[in-house]
Structures are given as structure tokens and as C-alpha cells.
Length: 91
Image (tube, rainbow, N blue to C red; front, side, top):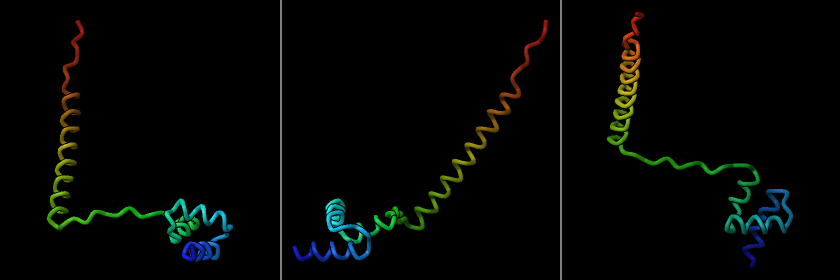
């Protein structure tokens, strides 16, 4: 129980939480006082970036470039096809 009291006192020194609120927050954050203080201050958890090898990154960039080029090409072709639609001849 001494460990929980220490954590509560740390939280109370770093925040304006009362003893009861500090205990509640500790329970919410699985008794991690650092996360309680980060929540109080407003620090959000950073998303972790997946580490990729150089080869994976190269092929990812190539795929993205080819996908963009193909999408642009298809858009140009469909626009040209729309412009080439035969106009109805007046009778």
C-alpha cells in the first residue's frame, strides 16, 4: 500500500488533483502515475511508426509513384474519351 501512497503523493504534487481523484485516475491508468500526469497536462501518446528496411521503402515509393501515374493517365484517357463522344447530328 505504501507504493500506492507514494504514487498518489507524486500525482498530487504535480497536479491539482485531490487524493480521491488521484486514486481514481491511478485506477483508470493501471496505477501508472506518469500516464496520469501526462493526461492532466494533455500530452497524447505518439503513434509508433513501423520501421521498414531501405528496400521496403524504395518499393513503397515506386508503387506510390506508379499508382499516381496510372490514376492520372486513366483520368486523362477518360476525359479525352468524353470529349470524343459523337455529337448527335440535327436532322
